[in-house]
Image (tube, one colour):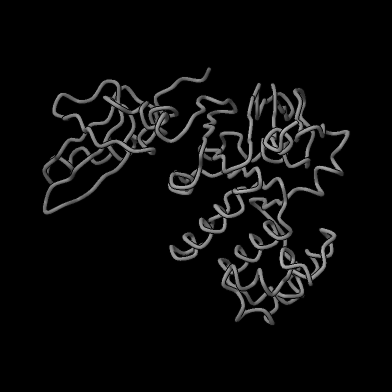
Length: 306
């Protein structure tokens, strides 16, 4: 078996029911070495799927494996190779930033003399070297997020699962995170879950889009973007027209007969509205310059549940 298959995370028919509601249903997903983006709105089922893949909760049905390791039989061995950042996490507030990473190092079976585990090395790599001796409770939200990212990456895990990793990061830190992510993705299977398209647009080699608990699209960024070709429009309203129609357009962020609003820009007394639609207003004109976010909206907001 080659190294790519040995480090592939796969799920087949993965489903999870809470009471009478299926939060995730019949999901197939494969994550090989590199960066795979998991996109979806809040409530799409991403976090539930992430918890199943990260061995935190069992599926109601379906199978999950990492290489030759099978859930739940080999969960202990999967966790030994896993770097995980949940959406909600609890750091040990009484420890310093350095002490926390030393604790994470020991929990992962590493030593501080190994550069892959070195707390000082990782503090520097996430820009927290000047905060090494601060108690975690004194760190800002963004600094805590960077500390949590460091513990997920340390030790060179073969499988990395990240749930909304850029929450609280400023633009400079997002760039630093993307650079680290691309480095880790050279040798690990990385699954990055987010509802922010820009988080994955520049780094993900492949994408899975979830909507209402189902997978509605898979492919690369170019293929997802192509779904919006011929479906993106703009229209310009005068200030008076905007004032009279504001309530209508501000409520067009879900699927409607006229599509979904991608952007609203007020500019010199007029208002430009960007719309992803299969049935645009007659005054709208087609736009050729489409992006991944347009493709994402065309896939989710304009597509009915499978």
